[in-house]
Amino acid sequence: MIHLPVVKATDRKFEADPDNAPTEDIREELFQLEKEGELEVIRVPDNYIELPTKYGRMKKIPVEKTWHHKSCGQCGHIPGYSTSIFWLNRQFGLDYYDPTDQTSCTAWNYYASATSNPEAQAAVAIRNFAAADEVGYFPLIHCGTSFGHYKEVRHALVHQHDLRRKVKKIMERLGKKLVIPEEIVHYSEWVLAMKDRIAERQEIDMSNITATVHPACHYHKLIEEDAIYDSEIYGAQRTAIVTGTLQALGINVGDYSTWFDCCGFGFRHILVSRDFSRSFSVQRKIEVMKEEVDPDIVVTHDTGCVTTLDQSQFAGRAHDKKVGLPVMSDSQVAALAMGAHPYKVLQLHWHNTDNKPFLRKLGLDIDKQWAEFQAEVDLIKAGKKEYMTWEDADK
Amino acid sequence: MMALDLSQNKHADVSYEEKERLFEEVKADERWHHVLYGCYECGICVAACPSARFYDFSPRVIAQAVAREDIDLIYTLMSDSIWDCSQCFSCDRCPRQNSPGQIITVMREVAVKNGLQTAKDALQGYGRIIYKIMATGSQVSPDMLQPDAFPDWGTHVYEIAENLEEWRRALPPETLHTTETGWKVDQKTIIELYLIWHMTGVMDLIEGVDEGLFMILVDVMEERLEEAGYDDITFD
Ligand code: SF4
Ligand code: SF4
Image (tube, rainbow over all chains, first blue to last red; front, side, top):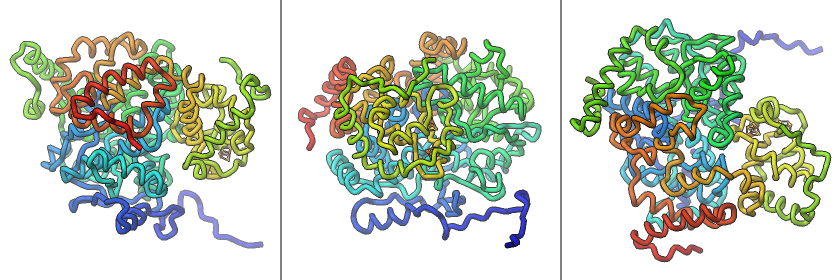
């Protein structure tokens, strides 16, 4: 009989070894293709922070010179999400670029309706990357689906010569180059990389807060090796994204049994079959979080997840479901911790589920803060001001 | 919910050759060899699948059908089940490295490309979204937040719709003052997007599944493309 040393699961420490990673390092392939003249690689700018990915490889996260690839759903329906990302950049005095030469990645539609094809999807991606490169900035992707989809597009372009050739031809026709970023970086990775600097500037104590985290499927399930993992968080058995940020802010992160489940977004379902989205979101996520953790807030890092988890709770109330958890992005929570205005910056009036108890628990005078926001809106309504500016937002 | 009886050949009216042709198209996709390696029937994908909990739907059945090349069953699944998938890719947990979700992506694309009735049915009521993304470069926009479109999202949608213009102006980033698109998009950028749709055959694809939508898109695009000096947009 062979006697193997028995190590209890809790005593075991998982150390990822990049030399034994089961997947290729796509960056090596990219640089090789660049040498062969097949494409050009957009380098991560000099000022970067390294974070470990699933198999222990280090990923470069640019601190500044970032080109903000915005998200349709964030900008359209929960605009305080993106506003908070920009606000954080401004607070640190970082050089960033908010482009108008940017389209959606169009992947929401692709996953919803299949009314596209790999060439079109890759061409849309490369057009956006080229637009970033032309102004000398590095793409930072706001949407979880754009992030996952772009990782897949990069993988396809590296491995499919025919696709590369077709996309190159399209780019030539548009007067653009076939450029691919050295790293595909999600904004929540930037927030995680900046967590200690955010914590240094924290103004609102959050140590009395318990949160549950929902990781976005397309962040950690598509090209899974390119998501951030940390041996200190969940023993590197799950992605450290969002959880690492919240813990740095002193928030207690509660665990729940359906952590891996999706939010119920479904791409086509959230638009045309919402009965599914509502049921899944409420029954498999919100109710489970409530029963097992009873958190003050749910924090996630993607457009569809914030939307589905937040908006679905309204209908749940009619069915006496255990709902009532406010939902925010990590960028909003980080900005709030640093003293951002809940309405002028976080724009929480675009969210659905009541977030006032959470804000009050943090000691905020939200009636006064709503009046401050309303005063800005009144000035706009009266024609005395065209827009609310960044300076107004920080007054 | 109607049970999906997989024991019957529900589409006996469609010839075997036609079903086979469609499956050959699925298999010809470049992704094919990275999404199917066989199937243990272990059901791990089903356990992780959100759609399997709410629909008569199973990623295992999809993987099994394509692995066994069961042509009639594949056609049945293509005519119904594939549109239940949430495209979350939780099934990428498969120990055999299959991706039932990606198999479905490819099957959906073939259904759309061939203008199958299933695709037309699935896309009913979805046309305005395709219009939005293809014509404006943004999947959803602030002005879509109307109470009649989202009655189940509660009264706050009324409040947003009523204050839309001013609330958009009360956003500090200058790019977000828009109501018809998520953010301000340059004219030149939209033209480049239209050229991509034309050059990659996406316009032909739309014509096959929704002719009305195709006509509207052509109208909108032609004018702007002509203004930008693109009279001839053929591409080989
Ligand atoms: S991608 Fe589709 S089949 Fe796979 S787990 Fe998600 S819903 Fe199920
Ligand atoms: S997880 Fe993979 S091997 Fe198991 S049933 Fe699903 S497709 Fe088959």
